[in-house]
Image: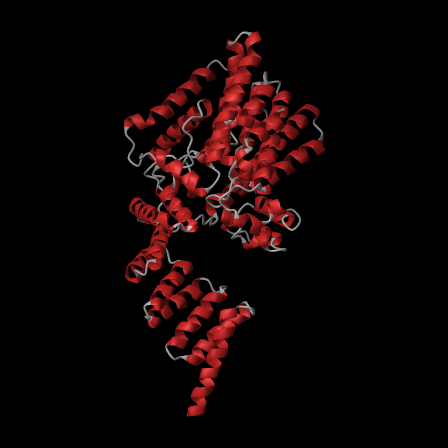
Amino acid sequence: MILVAALATYIPAMSAGFIWDDAQHLTRNSVVRDPIGIWRAWVSPDTANSFPLTASVFWLQVRLGDVFHIWNLDFLLEHADGGVFSGYHVVNILLHGIAAVLTWRVLLVLRIPGAWAVALIFAVHPVCVASVAWISELKNTLSQVLFLLTLLTYLWFDANERTSTYLWAVVWFCLALLAKPSVVPLPAVLLLYSWWQRGEIARRDAVRAAPFLVAASIAGIAAVYLPSGGGAGAEVIPIGGPASRVASAGISLCFYLSKAICPLNLIPIYPAWDVALPAWHDFLPAVALVVVFVVYWRQRIRSSTRAMLFALGYYTIMLLPALGLVKMSYMRVAPVADHFQYLALPGIIALAVVAAMRWLPRPAWTPVAAVVVMTLSGLSWMHSATYRNEEALWTETLKRNPHSWQAHNLLGVALWKKGDPASQADMFMHFQRAAELNPENLEVHNNLALVYAARGRMDLAIEEYTRAINIKDDASVRTNLAIAFSAVKRYADAEAQYQRAVEIDPGNPSRYSNLGYVLMQQGRLAEAIEQFRKALQIDPNLPEARQNLRFAVNQLERRQDLR
């Protein structure tokens, strides 16, 4: 019943298109498209493959595309705006359904009343749409399944104390970390569980949690300190000092609680709040939360109070990585996002269900639960329909958050891909607005420059490309700037840009070929031939390099014959 509820709720998402960074993880991802690319996901992960287990699952799905068209990337790319049944979406929905079933099993072992209702509500909760209807968030659904398997196995070990069971719990946790490091709070959850069950944290509890802590520490350090890219460029992530972080963490936690309890007005990108210089009232949410914990901590001798503290503690601990206490690249977009509370959500749902069962008379339990589940399922159905394609998603976002630079930028990109002449004015307006809202973003200036170039305004395109490069020295933007210089026959300027682009990214054959072309236009045939040959060393089948090399060699021979 739980699995069927999840599948039925997300029927609109099964034929949704690609959104946001889906193309980065799939259609533009050389690792998942390479027949032997799975090794690169583990040996040298890049921004799109920073979670190797998640990248491996994508790689396996792409291989299924050789047999089943619902996983065929080229076929799906033709229908990127949705309307076609997609295996990638179905896998994500199935993983979510499995996570809901595992939630039920974990709660049964913990002897939580209404475990079935908690799992059903989690299966259909609208907050989960951002994780389930978005292909790239496979890392969320996959890590949730592995995280719950870790909890379930550990609970079995706590009951039977078999070493093999314990080792399986460690294995599941390591796999969860490789799917997404946001599961790092697990050791704290295990210690909190020990305190709830026995009223104290004994030495043996700490020893049992130690291997999980070591694995979590390694993953956490890697996530924080290793370069993650993420498209942030040279932007400053607005996290602020200690006071700002505490204020923002309190506001974020209250925000997540409100959306978990009343999941209305959900949008992919929420408006940001400014706590760079927090006022006294900005600390009220954090103070209120601390007061609640302190009040109930003093009553911890009661088992029911300890259970409530465990649920609240679980919810808070699992949200810690997303509360703004440490930097995350997503914070350049917004301080909060629905998909950040996906792992934590079952904790607060369980607390709400148990509280409702205490307050409501027994005959009302099932009817009330049925109404709640059907209502939430209907909301999720409508919300998941918003994710059907980029244009629908970002149009809806801007209705509720008109100052989102990312939504303006991405809607502009969606309209660009659409190619509808009637949409060109709107596309240009959205790119301009994105640049106004976030003038320190490389991507928006590059996109605006592409529009100027398409309209033949190379002078304005060159200005925007230059602004983008001043933000971050990027090979792709320098290539675009070189193309603009070539279009106005400023070949020497184009040469300088291509030279710098190949320094930044020496593995791109097209840039060597383009550099050879601008050298050839300046009459420097020998140097051009050298660049064409470099391009062909990387890609022997690059047609423009072969054609230009043949032409340059012929021209050089004629010049020598004339001499």
